Image (cartoon, rainbow, N blue to C red; front, side):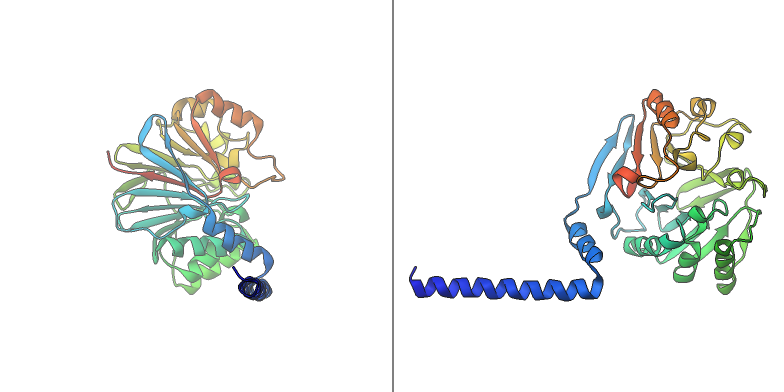
Length: 312
């Protein structure tokens, strides 16, 4: 290579580097540094897949990459546990229908809406606000305002908080009504059958008001517990269930030994935030889970968690 050619290449490389730097500066100025970092890391973030011992028809995927466009009419059950920090938000999709259980905190509503739209859902068949705590219904108004919704389920117990009032206002603007479920009530999400296992009207204990839903699809069962604690767990007997959403973010006030001995899950998902102020999941709870020998996923460690069940 001649000296002239070498100089030309150096000048070209320098020009390209300058252009890239200018583009990055423009992007940072427009979107913000953190958002740009998220854009680039999201592109490179791989989806981690794993099978669950004893549940051969189930695959678990984790990471932001699992929130992507799907064929929502496919007869495959997908259960998303969105990473919404120290809060809950679960999306069930099967055979053209869907159910959202909770929507995170007030500042998490936008993320939940974006996730739902990224998956390709235009209408939610069911929206469930398990109980009127901000870390469960905070983002429901964003969901109701931005996505077409069908039946909205919430417990009878109301509060006077701004968060609750925002949800009620959003429901009113859409000219919808709240459906208060009853224990034993059943409904379908696609080909998945759901049953209300617990719900209370208890203004003194909002966690006890949690709507608890048990779902079955092709012989495999799921239990979504909201923030139900030991009082709710001890009030009835529980059938064996394969997949358990850990009650109250893995708090020691839930997942009693008697309850776990009845449910005996093979897979548990805990929705909690990194370094949260509550210390969730509690050590005692994790010890009880470890004794079961089941597989445990945590959103504070894995990010978004997607459980995929194919028919046997």
